[in-house]
Image 1: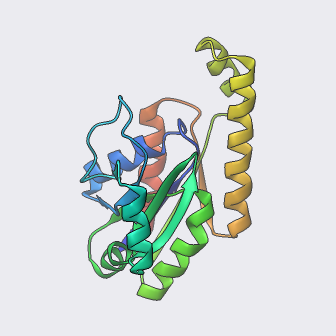
Image 2: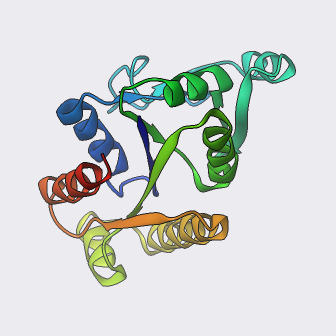
Length: 191
């Protein structure tokens, strides 16, 4: 079956859209592991997108045992996916979802090809700069925070474009419901 990959900066709507896909199409997450602590506003997603609070020692043990397809560091935390989880997702008849950072996309794509899976890549573009800047000002985000956010968005786009993978770009310029509808159209047309 298909794997839908969600890529984009925090706040672009990718987790919300992925959760909606899981709810409406019965998709299951390919689990990603991270040393990052769960944020206060996050539910326990041990059966969802992440297994949080994994020790760096466990990551190193998994790497040394060749259990991990990829491990990468982002914002001071390790993230990774086990080979067995990707292989199982490629061999099942169920729809799967995974949220990834751009620097691991090529490794993930190579693994999916190795296991004979099908994948669709969705890149979540934030609202146009002028809309985004207005939203940040309304939220009383400082100028320095705005600049850092815009730089992070540019980095994500640059890194994703470098992969050469065929992304479907979805722009978050309205409500969450509108964003989810855009994803629904792409997923429905892909199945």
